[in-house]
Length: 417
Ligand SMILES: Cc1ncc(COP(=O)(O)O)c(C=O)c1O
Image (cartoon, rainbow, N blue to C red; front, side):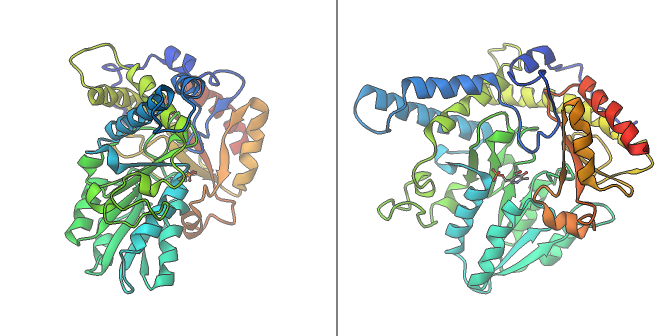
């Protein structure tokens, strides 16, 4: 059995948690949360509140428009607090991580010159690879930082060997959406900055599980999607002010460089979805007992500490079972330690097409998924494409040990058949 951190200090009130997700605990067991999480009730309430009482264009002088403007400013400030950005102007909202990274690459590339270099990994979701690969068209060289197949981890020595005085940017994932492994972002940022390059981190696989602190990590750009963090189909891009400011505008011709974040939000960010993200914070803060001495970030930190300790138990239950099965190969970190991984667990079964596994769980109303999860290069480089990728079980804190056991019970006969 792998080691589990203590959960006695900050236990989650699981009954309350599950009751706060209206779709959880009904017919289906949702175990494909890295694909998209269920939505928390306070998010729905904020969404309704916005649409029912302030659904007008921003910036006019009449009271309802003033209220709408205030609400959007409030959402922007709260998002900055959520990730510990120094300034709300550093927070860009948009419809998806994929689109925000496209916008970033399009603008940033205009500050690059032919011969400059960008480094991407082979274990990222394609959202943080394709936009950078496209820069090859303007003469930018793209190098791949490859996962070491024997450890299934990125090695910093390999990055050091790839960095040069021409490197302008390194793009990588915080936690792989297949392997679940957490990359040491601060260490990587220090290395990248020593080469005077920028670091762009895809936090999609990490954000549902841990509190983000962009300043502590010293990242230059950081992006994640709210629909995996108990919210709506909406996304956030953080950029350090000094790096966002020189970027050209992606908005109308008369929107200037200084107009942050609006210059990177053409057409404006969706108002009601932006406002609804406040509901995520409403929810997370309620995971913490009342204590007036705590700041809002302290409370979030407590909430994610409870979440991650609990999730480690879920990982342990699942990994212990999978590791006990001789036909199963866990693809990724086999330890459940929350310092090392999030509870996104991928595996293959000897001589079994991964695509055949999830449908066999559907009669039991257990929702999991197989494939490459758009981390296509990883699946190809690990030689798993012919097997239709991996089977992935991705847990979050509203899942229970009983749900893990229900999965295990139905999975076991499939593995020995
Ligand atoms: C790790 C990771 N990065 C990026 C994305 C893309 O996010 P979006 O759907 O918001 O474009 C996903 C989506 O599954 C993902 O898992």
